[in-house]
Length: 367
Image (cartoon, rainbow, N blue to C red; front, side, top):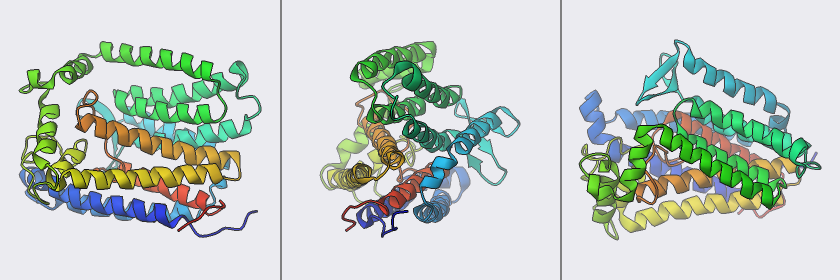
């Protein structure tokens, strides 16, 4: 077995910085909502501190757990994620915001879709690393991989969460392509994927409304275009240097839950263009170090797993920023490591820990 070395220090610092900024911005953006709903302005701050602490413990744990053990446990991990999804349709399932997406544990809630992101990536990477010689074969390699992707995304679609399903599907297809899928197969899959997304949008009226509002949000600024317009107001009023930390106006009940799906707009309003660029630079550093870890990995599983984690982080970050800037129809996607949300923080910090562990066996500069 290869000698274990130090973890990628640059990656670790970038992750910790993003989490720290997230704690500060969650507090700043949630202050009015927390006071209005819970009569405690520190409600979401306390939750984010707790979640970040648990996430840090998880990151340290996975940073020191040999990632090859995940290969052996991949089936158990994936099946566990499916079981968690099944619990949604028991008395433990909780319906909020028009969807059954949360499991209530009494003292807290848990989102199985977040666990499925990491669990399906691990399982698909384990499967493809064992099928590397036949992955270009459509019947023996591509179809079984697509079945895994279909099960993973389907378990999220039934929760009426199309955006999360699309984000995960794109990350899993990135893994499949890097494993050796033919370009012609990828192109065909892309056509079917776009058709499937279009069908899912047309099947639900609220999704059609989101697309309609995206095409001209200011024409529907008092209705379905409200969120997009208020987000643009926040970004526009921030200017170059922002209004100042804590000085946002849009967080005062103009943007619903600004500490989650639209936190980037509050960052732009309070910290300005400079603050947004800082966040994007930290995201790019994580992507850069993750790609280097993937390219330097000594085995197929480590290469695909690190690429899959980076792919998920990249796609979800892009979708969040695109929604906030009205570059795509509005949807509920948190900004990784920054937005409020216990399950999301736990999963992405665990994923960062896995990346850091893979880096301990690579031949790369860790400074």
